[in-house]
Image 1 (tube, rainbow, N blue to C red):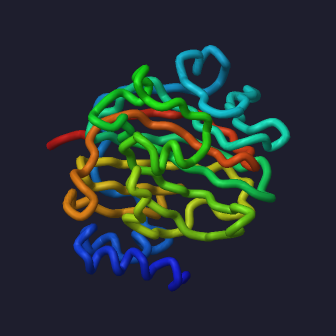
Image 2: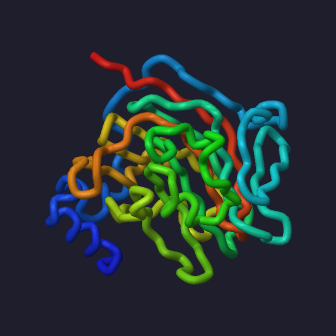
Image 3: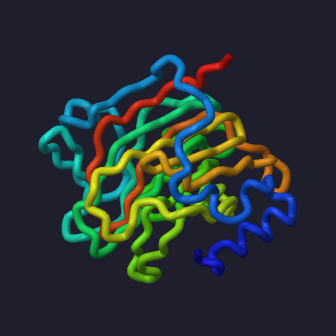
Length: 252
């Protein structure tokens, strides 16, 4: 257990910024998927061809390559960071799943942004929003209100970090330091599952819970509702993705 990384979350919980479930790792290794069931399918994208993502938006010098039913995302010559946005607005509560695989374990960092809206409730693609080119400050300290989870982190400045972080932007504050996401040297196929039930956020990797926290909407402002979802990679990263789906939450 990485005690150094757990302490910030414990302090946040003590300060009232998050519920007690936010203290430390979200759940022990092996925690299986529980919680809300899937309702109606809202969106599906196989990520199998260029045509599948013709209405998605790439920010930064990210490139796509399609092979064997997968969408590979990378930056040629490791030029710069990049973000790939889904054009659909997701509701306040949803379940999203996708498959992913690391093709280069030497370096990299993978993030999912969600509940993303421009400041003042604008669409993130509003003409009045500042231009973005994949540089992180435009997403975590700019004019986008969102959450983001880093679930693979092997940054050259902090190699083999080992845990996942849930942050709230643009304050860029950690709401939770959770369990390990994709292992640094893993080249296996993985399945990510993100559940947002209003302010309650849970993320699983291969049925293992890595994040579980409720944003109480007090210390860092109101909890975020619906908005866009996007995939971010740092310049060194070479991952591939497929079978991205979003469902409503099934209510009893």
